[in-house]
Image 1 (cartoon, rainbow, N blue to C red):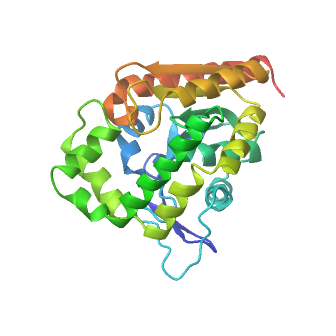
Image 2: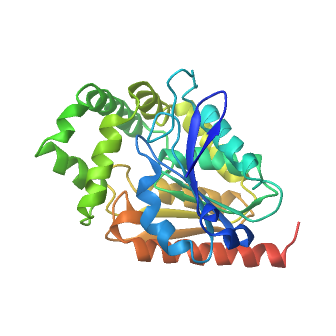
Image 3: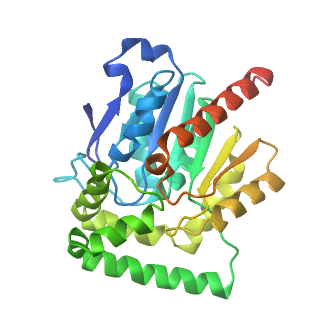
Length: 296
């Protein structure tokens, strides 16, 4: 458990190599969180993967234990990518091809930017529940209403600390039952995240120009990409991730894979931790073999 000082913040991160020095020789997995949530929800998967991988999690500015008081960070994809890039370079993860980057929800956008910045270090990318949608009047209307939902959530988020709203909040995110520990963590993270950061992230995540740029950059990732989606996701429609997979499959020469979890929602890392970790490991091993067979 450490802090990295930068112009943006005091960035809180956890690195499994701090408690296990042998992990410094292992392949590295960097986890990038989604909207209004700290990195704590990765812990069940980290506990599984850390036997074979050096696992790194961090709290993006505006969430968790990262300190932004006294700083003036920009809450944009560029800004969030900058702070993650500083962490990558601080830990020396950019100097050799050992890095797997996993991004969830909005974190998929940040993860994509990091993949573009560090192509020679990247072994694989994984994007979870962060898709693209065809631009139609219907999807535009959907984004409009989602923007209204974000405004409502931020202005009245204290109600999610009370039942039945607390339970409804979790059920929208997770289709399968999750433990009370993580039930409480999700509520605490959302209701205590920085309001300005949370609102900004919610808005740029549905901005048309941001989404177009995201699509272009996903196509440029030169390492194997896994698109992962819970088919019962009620937070972000799963069709978007499938469209992202199909678009990349058709337009990129780099390998593209799809993991569909038929009975899971927006939080597969909590709903079925072992199953989700197994899919990640399978993808990591596939990507490692890909680079061995086609060294660049």
